[in-house]
Length: 491
Image (cartoon, rainbow, N blue to C red; front, side, top):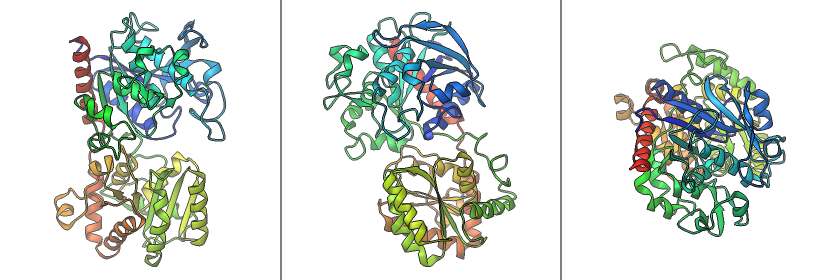
């Protein structure tokens, strides 16, 4: 068993090439941390049009058949920009060379051939674990990330030539990749696999369930979420299979890329700062107010929120909280996109509170840094949250998080009390119920401390900025999972 196994990450997105959510941030940061600990880690991603345009790679060999009846593919070899991680793009123009996003068209509709697009990714991933591998490199561990890579483990399981162990990480169980059973023949999945003890899921072929059932080891992105998804409330129909495989499941809290998220070095900020000199944060707040059309006022508390505008993330709880806090004379800086009805409702809310609510609909990486640095409070009121990253970013930037006690939010924020602030552990504010009134109550408590107890507030900020959310410890935990997967595969 190799002490430092060769690891292939099979994933649908990775920053800075393509990003729709936190998955893209996690993958390269974890890979780099593992490389720093001596592992040979490489990435495999689909060659979407925009990704190939931004990738300085070279063709690695000729086109080859992946699955009978599907277009031939070839590999492009290069390195992930900004991370210098060895990376392959899977080039297959009929499946990936198109406008729109990685999963949907320009109108936000799922591509109708997503089952083929990500089956091809999974099969090529599995091929890296067989024989001599591909392009002169063979993986000891195939690590699939989320449903898009769920079939890696299934293809590896049913191919006796594949000797690599398999690990599958659930980044968000709500997105499962469930397709009609008619795709099974096209994807060359054995009929024996289409059953409850396999990848069948309520009459559909499920990429997520394939990963859960056939992988040697499973991980998810926080210890609390690992426990929650084994229950009916949070299991999205998968609690049974997860309970059955509970002994193979490990919850590992995501880390933060300290090179991208550090207020002392962040080039996306108008001014930089650290815990010893917070003057730059005050300048970031003024810049934030300007960019969001908010009245300038260093003493007015600004509440920030960034992310996908969905009910899962709790954006629908904001209207009640906004109205409850209207008398408190606070400001809101809101950035994100997603559900059209939520976007429209937030637009109407902003129109009713001019100068108090700033709303930017869309994705803007640079502006998200300004929100997290310039706000005084940062809220993540999610109904469920596998890990979450923004609440960790906000602590490192001296911006107190106000979060619902669920998933990774519960694992990364400690309730602020006089005792916890004094002992250095208190970093934010938590609430239990997924409601606008509960969110408002937690925000009111935070605003009260901000206005009435600046000594405690400064200590709370310092506590957050001292947190170690780096990838060193999570990477070591993943290394232990890889060894466990190899023992299962070889033993």
